[in-house]
Image (cartoon, rainbow, N blue to C red):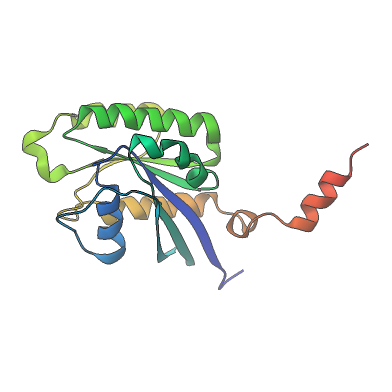
Length: 193
């Protein structure tokens, strides 16, 4: 099995203006775009990481946060291994929406997807609305990791994706990395009656 490259889908969800695109840009390219425009569609990025001696390709989908695109988002998280749910610490509504995203992901995917909660824009501490203790308590209640990040300064961006890669590795099997064995699936389906 050594030398196998695992590919794993990761999706970022959250309302508009939370910094999802900026987080991905900071992680993948090491850059922060000052005048970033709201995503109008999903964007795809890849990054290879080594975790536990295995090369992992994180296939990162940055989804549009605008409400009018919400109906398309399930298409992106359908086969994702990890969802990063992002909110803006200066916007209480974005935290409420993050909770809705988590409920939706849990009801549609159950335990088949790992969740990571991210409070972004920690560089704006002086105008914080969502208290760290509140977000931590919520994450603890759900038994999911919580990070506060700043895409602008780079604080905790790498740590979020290390957590993601560890979650992917902990939940990976040969089948999940490459898809189901079609011959095996067909045999199982045809053994009816």
